[in-house]
Image (cartoon, rainbow, N blue to C red; front, side, top):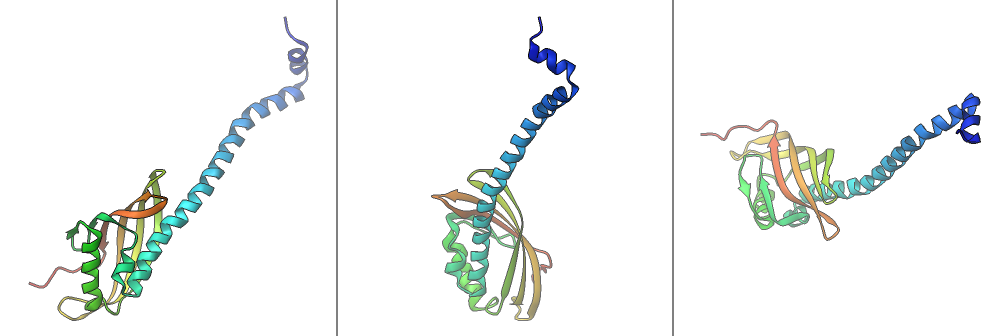
Length: 178
């Protein structure tokens, strides 16, 4: 036996259509609200991740290796543009201090984070495109413009994003002189 509500919905096409739309719209509205909340949460995380890259770039541009490395993990796995691995923040800092005293002492670097992919709430992969002016090659000649890519794996530890892995490529790298 039909109830009067079911019976009236079947007889009233407008009521049937309203109920049908409500049943379809509720999950859609819930999904949109969740996506908006995720974007807001990721917006704050994106800002924090981009600040790590900006801090790296600021340290570079002031030729301060210690400041540049402030957001690296103590046991960072670092591979430079020549494919040379370094396994600690101190090793990366020492290498860059030498470079800033010589070949990179007049450099200026710009970074542009292109993508951030969150593997979990506390793990992200970051694609950063960089340019550099003012470098010199090991033979002492000018290397006026360079461009490349850095791929960072970042972890959120104690509420702070840090670089745990870095691989860098130089788009216009040249083989060393023989």
